[in-house]
Image (cartoon, rainbow, N blue to C red; front, side, top):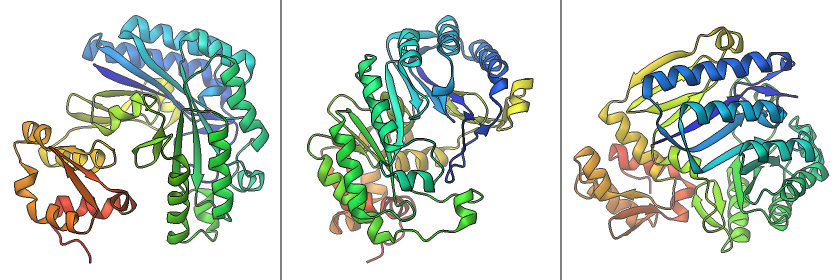
Length: 372
């Protein structure tokens, strides 16, 4: 069993903070790109067989720029080549300003049953500041249109730490998201990636303390209605993103499209990020089997991001290593500092631990003394 990620690299306008593989002004290549995606599906089915698929995720870029007919064709191709489960979670990322009654209804007919709407902020000035194409009203309209179209599983993305953003403004954003009646909210701290317009501009950003305060205030607002099941993700019970859980638990997933990444049967690989190369038929550019050490690092890094944490018994079964013994000193220090908790056979990070997740992971992996 595996999941599918389908990368759609087309955008109306590239955001100032975005370093994903996405392209403006190349919409005339959509049909050729869809054909290339189906060609990659053929190659994958030949290599791996018709494996069961439990989730599909259309990400981007802006997948909601696709026509309903194109989404239907891609879903038909998936169902023909793989064993798509009847209860599969089919997610599409959507941007406000690109959705309406017609395309939302078409996506529903094609089988999409979950939307992830990239609101980012309800502050019009901040939206303009980072190059978003929509307004706060259009963001609210996008959610309501999706609800009217029959989507019951809707997620909203918000970003905090934007240039000029204040704590009270972000709190207002979170309140407005909750008020829309969605079942899932993702909160991402701004990361200024090298080479992006925002990085080149080098704006004044919120301090680490201010960013932490935003995260803490948001968590307080969301609890207990929304469960923090991963560092950046909150969901009402039973509405967690099944697709993203596959990533965090290191399940098999096949990435289709330009710049897509995959983990299949212990091997990681990625596609070329060059759109023309991908359309011409060139796909995988790097492929490597994971070493035991790399798999351990990934398992510790990813599992500690989640509410479930590290299962000691599963870890020992997979890697032949009892963390409670081999990392006893690090675990003891982290417990003393209140950064982790152990319940039964599971190690989980506390909220304090989530605040400094990278440092906790480093302590577990290297046995370095945790800074006092």
